[in-house]
Length: 249
Ligand SMILES: Cc1cc2nc3c(=O)[nH]c(=O)nc-3n(C[C@H](O)[C@H](O)[C@H](O)COP(=O)(O)O)c2cc1C
Image 1 (cartoon, rainbow, N blue to C red):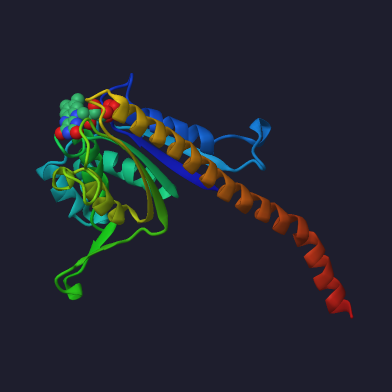
Image 2 (image 1 turned 90 degrees about the vertical axis):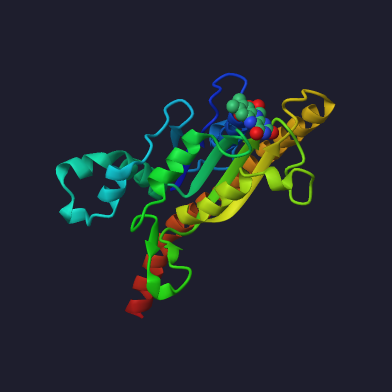
């Protein structure tokens, strides 16, 4: 079963570019066999809209609670980390995470940072062991894929470009993604939104095409896996019968 966690963080519900990119990708991936896909893929999609409903900020009580052993937590401490538990469970259930992130003040929206603060949690998503020397943190989760859709008002934020040093959005998310168990990242970016000119139109068009093509690529891969699984299941009775015949000989 493929499972996608979709995290949108733009404060804009209308005319948001990052939300549009996420929609294009998710719609493409979710296309069913009835709509022309080669096979129906078992897919669950969970949406966590931190732009519309921001997670709470962590505070001293939260930190005390997460550093208290699970079976020693008070009822109040368990209640304090209930939101974090839920968000972490959504993450653990997902094989693919799709994040839509606008650049605000050269970084991620505070709502998205609040989400990361709730889920990057000791003994849940990372372990801490001083026996590892100067790098005591290690992710606990593995094998996840991140699709990262960003939109920026200015431009030139890519490696080697003029505003690279001002880009505190992509690198930060990619760094934290490691602690979500992400091992593969597919980034798609739009720039020039504040200029609204031809350069923006080109950037937008390129990203829409990329988001759609990436969706097709994911769907094809999942379809191939679904077909392979079907073939294994179809052959299973025959294989079992052959095994029985072999034993009889
Ligand atoms: C509060 C706020 C802060 C922003 N800060 C920046 C910024 O620091 N750098 C930048 O290039 N664009 C900045 N922008 C422009 C947004 O990144 C741009 O509008 C982007 O398209 C927003 O994503 P969305 O379309 O998904 O809402 C800012 C926009 C807002 C509303």
